[in-house]
Image (cartoon, rainbow, N blue to C red; front, side, top):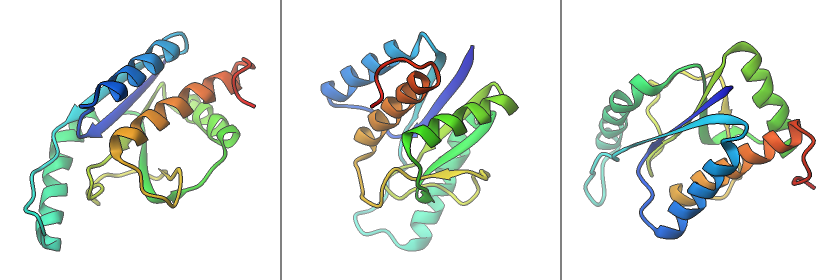
Length: 155
């Protein structure tokens, strides 16, 4: 069975996000083993300097580093834009090289440059709350599996 890991800096707090995540975990369970790893965001002052931000991102990296396994896909606003169909094709191409694909969602300041990934993915030029974005990723993963398996969901 395919293994998908979502490593997130920050956690879901609102009940409606938690319920949405449970729904997508249930839907995805027929296609893959989904593991969600939440790690706490490093606390920064109200107006942090660039060096404070870099230091915080590097500390977050050290916390998430042990969970970065398989094909690493960084969710980044400067990443590649793709359609749902292309995303589905690319996801299964990644699985042809490794049975684990790890998606990494950073904190409000992003991710450390220390994270090694040759694939960065962006969903939009817009900015989204990390909690909502996580649900959007899970929905796109479900959509990718339905596309691959010719299941009526994607239109």
